[in-house]
Amino acid sequence: MIKDTRYNIARMFIENGEIKTIAQIFDYIPKSVVSHEIRTNNNRFTRLINEPLEFKLIELSKIAKAIGIETKVLVNMALQDENRRPRAGKRAGK
Image (cartoon, rainbow, N blue to C red; front, side):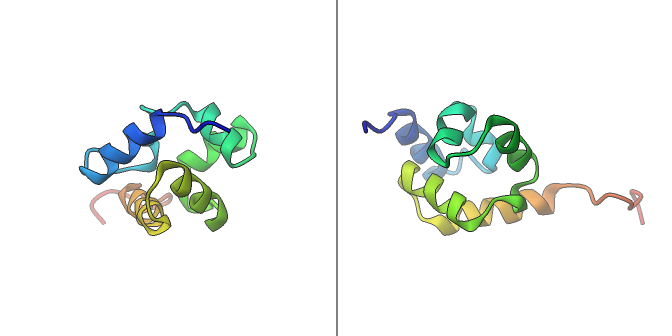
């Protein structure tokens, strides 16, 4: 199977620090291409992008391998994405 060249573009932007979140990856690679890579349906994949800690480690590993980066880079992105989100049930300023 021929690797999609858009993975290389995403890799370059991740390495340069221009992509800081998992969701930003899909500005360069269509979700359908990556969801096919990890063998999941588009609805579940969209949910995972919105809730990055729901990804299985093996899924992040497959995406990282396709992009050409270490798995820990995507794991760190998922953790940072979660830290950027406002917590449900907490009011601002408290």
